[in-house]
Amino acid sequence: MKFSKLLPGKLGNKSQTIPVVRLAGMIATGGGPLSSSRLSLAGCASSLEKAFSYKKAPVVAISLNSPGGSPVQSRLIYSRIRKLAEEKDKKVIMFVEDVAASGGYMIALAGDEIIADETSIVGSIGVVSAGFGFDKAIEKIGVDRRVYTAGKNKVMLDPFQPEKKADTAYLKELQLEVHQVFIDMVKARREGKLVEDSDVFTGKFWTGVRAKTLGLIDGLGHMSIVLKERFGDDVELKLIQPKRGLFGRAAPGVSNALSQETASALADGLINVAEERTLRARYGL
Image (tube, rainbow, N blue to C red; front, side):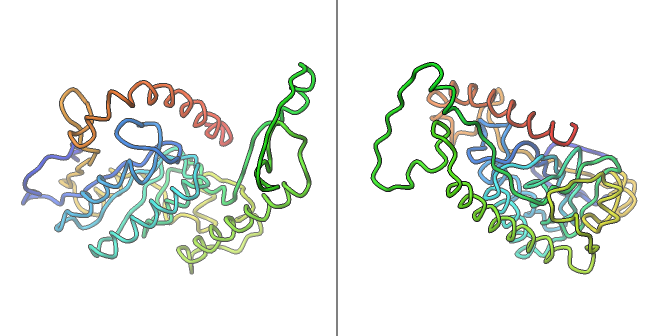
């Protein structure tokens, strides 16, 4: 089994060539050439386009490893994969690594098949919002916070003010709407496979073994082994990555922005790592 980086040229005459895209990290807006710790449509769009451009490839393989994040970016990535699959008439096989939970599982739904390791974490079909309340802290240290608004709801859920029941009730409404969209996606994409179980849509998560029993995934295995079994010992996997220039810098199209973005990207990256570790810790990873 060969596993190489994307090289321009021929697909090869002796073996099947399958393009592979790796989607990994916390799902959040702003991902791109300078933000390797985030997973967003901006960061993976070019790789997906390139993968689906392989006319002779029997399938497109996607390696997925994400604990979730932005529902909007999750749906955007899901939609782009499905659109390309339909336009190019390609089957998509999704391979879960450590985790495909919450928004990560939403992306996994773009696969015509979802395959995970027995110990992968899968599921968490729900919506969560989290934060801190500092109203008692600023009162204790004698800080007087002043906010001026036009519109009575502009400071809704302000962490420096006491929590209001009306605000949390409204947030709950929004969460339920997003949750229902997620549920509808699962039911549509896993139609005929999903097992009726009261826990499936509660936000609970499972190992790959249990996820297969529930119909959330189709099989257990690893990318190289599965593709070798299906397409022969000589199958070649082409890992497609975002185009980068000399010394690992971004491609010319974004090089002019480097001087303005590098410092903030480094600081932002530290925050992203902390956030992703927090998300992964929820799943024991």
